[in-house]
Length: 301
Image 1 (cartoon, helix red, strand yellow):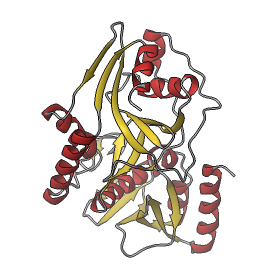
Image 2 (tube, rainbow, N blue to C red):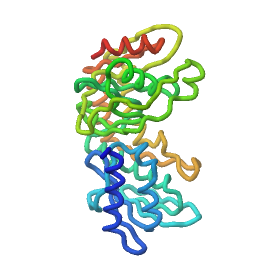
Image 3 (tube, helix red, strand yellow):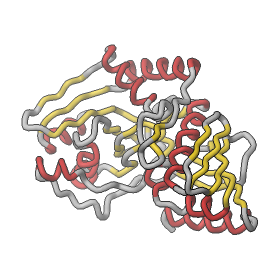
Image 4 (tube, rainbow, N blue to C red):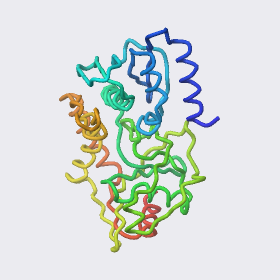
């Protein structure tokens, strides 16, 4: 049974056991921490079966309510209302995607309290070592990941986001590879087939050997940032985006952003980790053709 089929089977089993006539009480978990979702039965059930969970929550699972987790109290209504108050938020509305965004945001706070961090990009691995591809939209992260798997004997780890621990091990993954960006297709004529990608095992927790910022351009250039202020800044931003509500945290039809859940203590820990990563792991910007980018990445393992 594949991973997502197992997740869907767990959803059905747990929801059947826990639902009363009008109310549901469940925990959505990721990487050993979770968020309790309690409220309107039909809306919670619809939320847990929404495909968005598997696209934006790393290694999701379903379990019983845990008093140590934050809460989202869900009420169904045609009128939107949200009261944010960590660790308890109240949502009134009818959109599962709103609830998933709120839950994911609270999950990030819980993760960072345990020194785990959601970072945006794509990851591939080989022999227990991972390459993490980061950068702005339409620079070629997913395209580079696909090319490395297809042509350079890497395994697909995660796309869009991964969760790492304090030692830069990838402990949470998203196993759905999104479609190659239309911009990349149009401008760089890349049409890689995503079917049949070799994947790492779910149990494997590869350590990141290098962070690579790929940019598909006409000129071949490799820039090693090294242990610099630039490296520290970019790593700190990569570790901070999710908890500050800067990425995919707009709800109510993208009309309302979620508030930052950051604290001074968590920020200080991220600064320390950003410095540690910049000092011990190569952070490299590689511009050029896909073949050049992949060949240079080969040298980083």
